[in-house]
Length: 142
Image 1 (tube, helix red, strand yellow):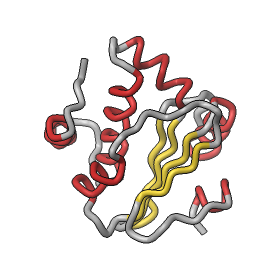
Image 2 (cartoon, rainbow, N blue to C red):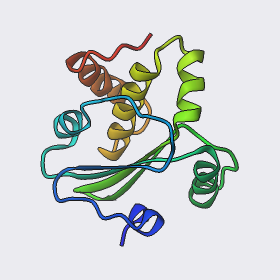
Image 3 (cartoon, rainbow, N blue to C red):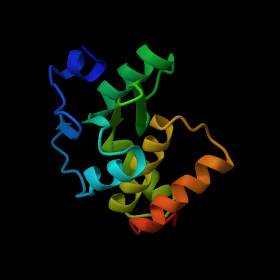
Image 4 (cartoon, one colour):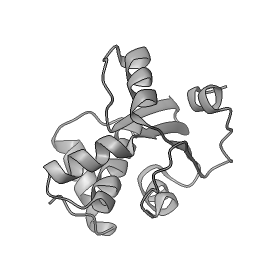
């Protein structure tokens, strides 16, 4: 049983994107499946959890030893499965800081998380791959 399954008692569907929103905050309509398929391939299983600040802080503390909520966490389970955890409260704050709409920042951050699941670390190669996906899906950096 993977992290999100044990945390939320939720099982992802095969070769798809499954989304669990545990908050009352509506999440932007993003073509998650299309972006995931482009970035990681159609055979990749991806679970997305949308959680509040308290839960995100706890997850970040337990898995990264950082005692604060963050906007995104990515967990690779194996070469064909992973999980992304998003916190809309932090995302809204960061969107304002970067002069972006919440919707655009959510898509920007999702692409960033996918690149980590693909195995990239921060740097020029990751930035180029992100830029290619952002251009294809019309996600701006500003």
